[in-house]
Image (tube, rainbow, N blue to C red; front, side, top):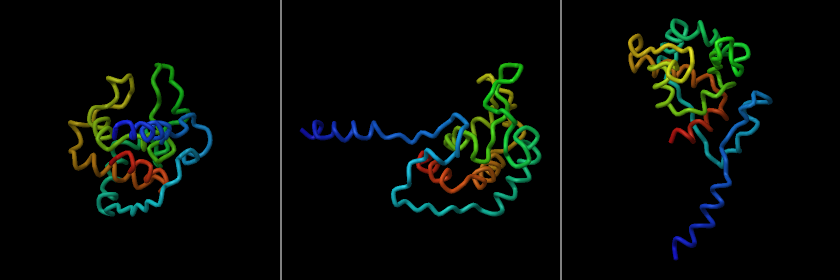
Amino acid sequence: MKYILAIPFIVLLAGCSDSVNDTGKGSPTENIPPMQEVTVTRYHDPGQVARGHVLYQQNCMQCHGDQAQGAVNWQKRDADGKFPPPPLNGTGHTWHHPTKVLKYTISNGTAKLGGNMPAFADKLSNAEIEDILEFIKAKWPDALYQAWLRNER
């Protein structure tokens, strides 16, 4: 009996979506469902963000831009059939991914996925990768950070 009562609830939840418009049109926050009385206090360790900024400049800025804005036309394949580096500042899709996936991508690169990003596992420690990610996450607008945090849990 309890399973029968759960079916309408499951169907209701199945209709919910946390997806965001990936077309590149409009504001990156326009399709984020409103937060339901959830207050997220953002705390970024200033030391970690500062270390991440330096590491970002040394390892990421050349491809992802000085403001983490990504390459122009990052959503269109280049002459090699690969996508250029996306923005990391919240205007791209980075915030859709949990930290575990972001760490994996930085460590292993995107060559196996048909991308151009090199692997950094031999160049950066786990702590340095976490510093870079903290710097990147600090750039995200609050609404995106909160949407990311909901998926992170």
